[in-house]
Amino acid sequence: MAHFQEALSRDAGCDAARLGLAELLYLSGRYADSAAAYAAHAARHPEAAIGYVGMGINARISGDTAMAAAHLDRGLKLDPTNTLALKERASIDLAQGHDSDALSLLDRAVAADPFDPELLYQRSVVRARMGRPADAHADRARSEQLRREHARMAEIESALVANPQNAALQVEAAQWMIAHGRAEEAIVWARMVLQDQPDNPDANRLLADYHQTRGEWALANYYRLHLSSAVPSAVAKPVTTGSK
View 1 (tube, rainbow, N blue to C red):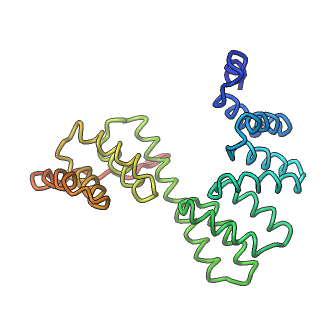
View 2 (view 1 turned 90 degrees about the horizontal axis):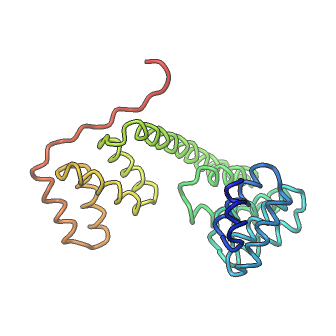
View 3 (view 1 turned 135 degrees about the horizontal axis):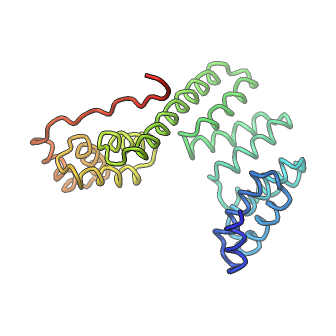
């Protein structure tokens, strides 16, 4: 927080520092100060949703539901797929007994980010309240599955800190990203593997499939050529914690 404040003292127009400070103030429970920082950003950038969304979440946690709804609605007009705004606005509707409105907002949020377990859990609660137990169960099961998958990615990241050159873990990270809608990051990881292991079959297969789905046949064929001469790569062993 001190670093962000120092940055702002040197450059009052540093938006990244102001937003970073606003988030830390919120996490520290200083909601009025956080709201003021978000308001300053909104004043500088009235076309950006983040300032209004930040003011909205601070107003909601401070108990001013009407103000929270107004700010969140403004943020959603500027950015209709902002999942944080959708989730917070749905919580307000749910608390007020507007289940159908809450469900509509959460449907939009899940469509925007289908890999967020919290969104699916929240939608399961709404569906259960609306007498849709089968749909609620499906959302809850998917939420729990995603939590396990996110936990596995956290294990991979932790293991890569200790062993950053582990190609099998790098490939698994790339595969995870592909499966969770983060293709651009996955491609970076796969290409990192190929810098050290040009014939790594899993990395080449991932890149070939990626370029094929984009209709980039020359690149897809380029990576598939490496598969014919590649030997099977080692599969990453599950990362464990605690005693063996």
